[in-house]
Length: 144
Image (cartoon, rainbow, N blue to C red; front, side, top):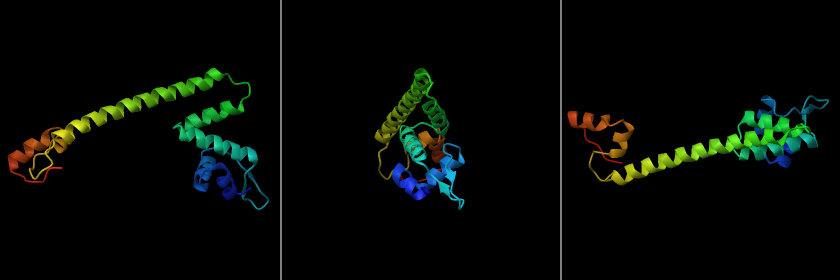
C-alpha cells in the first residue's frame, strides 16, 4: 500500500511516516515503480510507534521498544526498565512544572496589574536587575 493508505490505517500523517523511515524506525519495501510499499506489518509498526510516541517516549526509546517488541525472546524486565525510566522522567517534569507554576502564581499575585511601572514578574525574569535599572534612570512603563 502507498503512504497515504498507510497513514490512514495507522493514524499518522504521511510526513511523520516518512520521518520514521528517514530515522530508520520503519523500512517499507519498494514497488516496481520505486514508490514506497507498506505492508500490514509496517502499518502495525506505525500504529505501535504512534502509541509509544503518544505516551511520550523519545525516538531512541521507540527504537529500543520496537526492537524488544520484535524480539520474541526478550526479557520483559528490559521493557519494564525503559518504561520505569520514562515514568521517572515524567515525574521529574511534573515536579519541574509544579515548581514553575508555584513561582508564576506567586509573581502574578504580587503584581498589581495597574498603571504602575514596577512589575515583580519582569523584575524576577531580569534577576532583580530591572527594578534597580528603572529606578536609576526614571524609566516608566506599564506593569503586566
